[in-house]
Image (tube, rainbow, N blue to C red; front, side, top):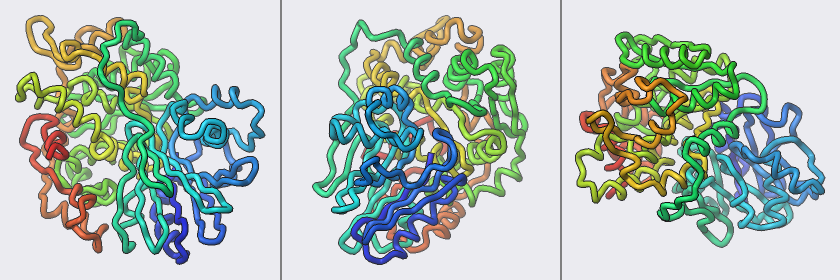
Length: 481
């Protein structure tokens, strides 16, 4: 996991310096920059795969290309075996990009399984290729500037430059010829022969577990995080569960019960309201958003990530399950015929809502959060499921995420898998934080003092703000119009 930046065809070297230095928190273990004429490209590295001593940015064996890579390719060992004649220079996962693109072009991207955003540059010509993963788990922004193009992992890198930032959309590439889509979530076919959901989740969790070193799991006591914890504990009995709560939290005991049932170590951060209030400004700056819903959900994760960062670099989470399996309460307020459109909006905009939150909060503390529910095979299976498999009834009462609860049979006690969990921010107790929109905007403006609020990408930072509504409704409203 890394923070990456590039300036291609931009003469002023201070531009790259501005981009790059703002991302140091994303890669505390190492850093490297390459400069060739008007090409400048760099990486701040959080070292997880490939050990120490890797020259950054990565360079192809023939020295034609430079690569700034952010993310994890979970099937990189399998891909290395398929290109065993390639003269590998490192053991890092990102290096597989070189032989795959050389052999197959953009079609080769379809073979990558993981979360990633990267910029590839041909040294002799300055031709470039920027790529983002299918769901946008990892961020990447770009802008045209002084006849060239610049890239960065976070918006804060671009905030002080005279340019109009854009996010690279999920499943897209950008090169000299413009923007192209390389991946699209397939349509619904209700394939009867698809492997069972439990099997797909087992495979996803297995692939997302780190090859070595400590590993954690964020545990709230709901079915999403509990199911990830249960599957991970089978393979890594040493995994540690982490929970954050305020006094009186409804989630603390269910989370502890899950950990006891699984036989895994459980560490609880019992925060205070004063502590939570004191880091709101830091949270807003890291989050790059000042709307109350995003901030309120980000504060507990900011605190928890800081807590976990002293223990390990890799944590698994249950993020994405609400969007895929109809977990949001607001759906009950809509006509059933509108549910699928609402779910599609949530999935397609994850990169601007929940994934932005979890990326910024964890990377602010040098932690890599992995999200097995957003594994491609799981996503495509979830999209295929009829609504009747996502929302139904159990013991005479309505339940959401029905397919997940059924997939947890034998992995969790019935009382826990059928528990109707509150939204995380409520169950953890953080819903009672006092957040004034004016204060949040002031914190945000301190970090983004010179940006044009009329530009859409900056307007996104405040487009929704009503926390007093059904769980998930603000996320739907954010991009529906």
